[in-house]
Image 1 (tube, rainbow, N blue to C red):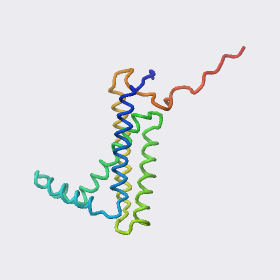
Image 2: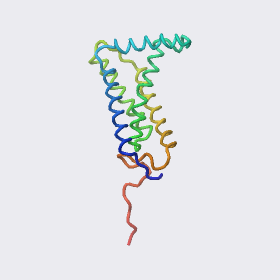
Image 3: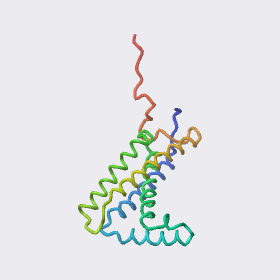
Image 4: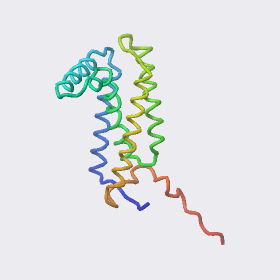
Length: 165
């Protein structure tokens, strides 16, 4: 694979987006009450019904699952673009562990929140989708415009061996 680099401006922008999204997501997921997310889910479900989506797609539980998937896509998409060495499997595993820890915190520490295994599955799926989208983006970018980032690519040898003398 050719050596490709992100420009410093693109890297800074990706880092800023990742930090902002991660911070906003942490605020939503670790808020002591689910009032805000519940309000958003209810109104989005109403809006989707208003657009003519069938009840099976616009019911609040379904909307919540879709939002859980969508919420985690940017984390692995932006992370994979910044750090291409971890594979899509690695990002999916990070998503599973992160989601499990969030749900455990909701179950143990946040009395007004409900932890569910379905959220773990949806969040993990979001991380998988984001990592796969990053693979697609990297393949579509012209050579010389991305890659490499902070960690060497998996296919790049870490050190060159000298031939025997």
